[in-house]
Image (cartoon, rainbow, N blue to C red; front, top):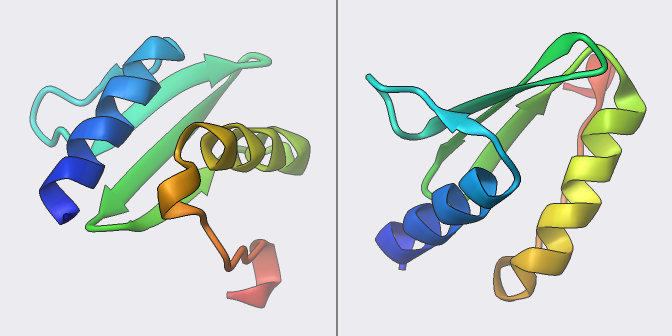
Length: 81
């Protein structure tokens, strides 16, 4: 299940014009509003970082729609970690 999730996630991120890191294909990045957005994952845990909280929320919502079967249930922001 972890391998198929990783493959599906990387395919969907590429569809959204993210670039996969050439050395670690579990890391994707894209420039949004002039700042880098980074997504890194291990099995089905994702870390999405961007300076604007609304960008992170937008990506979470978009991924939840695309990856319904693997819905993300816990979100932590900033000092919650």
